[in-house]
Length: 406
Image (cartoon, rainbow, N blue to C red; front, side, top):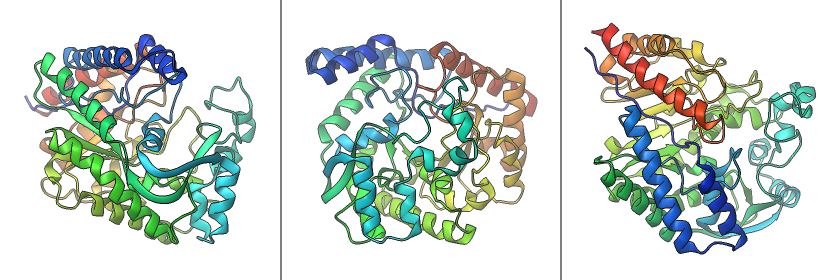
């Protein structure tokens, strides 16, 4: 039997008690020590549940990236706002106007487009504007995130040392309690954390590299703790839909290449064999007809100094793209981690379908170079009961694929 290992992509459903504790802490109704104890208990439980299901490479569920409501797509990104110095809060419109005034060119719009300006949201404006359509977490045209939005107004520095140390301590304690030696922890890429206003650095490149230098402190802390570092960078694929009007493929590739170069700058000298990279197309519960095809960015993804690459392959808009790997060669020593269950649907995939998806990749790049994963984080995307059922289907499907592959 071939062994197909399994993992997930980061965010997992938070228990109601943790969401309530996060809300109380934010309101000043709960002290930090009590909150920390509740967070530790929740991390212990989420690691145990992954272990019991049979997930091979577990994560902390991103529980340290606080969510204070059940539906929250932005914690993976907004957590960095509290860990970077040199930022000031202002209105979204003010942030956008200041940054556009710097004359950074059409691609600067990618950091500034509200959700209602995105090309998919324009094409399906009626659906996004209908609160009963079930296609979006907020009304079209609403600014992403909170009413106050960060703008870089001074030198970027990393100020999250205590926060990442606490995340690491909670996760390592949970791993030890569950008899596990290691797991992965996520951190945001420069290309994604720089999608805020910039009123300080003279160029887009200077701002990107400042983000890279700042976030390197978090990457190093995770690796120094003996954990696997997962770099989250939806911007590599998702930026495409946020540039209005649509750019040329060549222009977008150049725009993206700069972001990958900045990430590799941040990863310089770090152990590549313990770094994995995740991209996605956002893939909220809505239409995605303007997503950039994987074929245009697969080679750029492989330029990242990582040993494993996680991407959407179960999403109905991207499942067919397994054929990209008929043409794109996977470098020696690298691992593909296709999503074989999706966060973008409430349907729980059948293990037979999961196995089919795994086999497609295994027969193209070798079963030894495939790990089965999820399209993106499940926390806040589907109901907890559905999320855990999807992880069970993932593990069952991987076992079935292993039997089939011999």
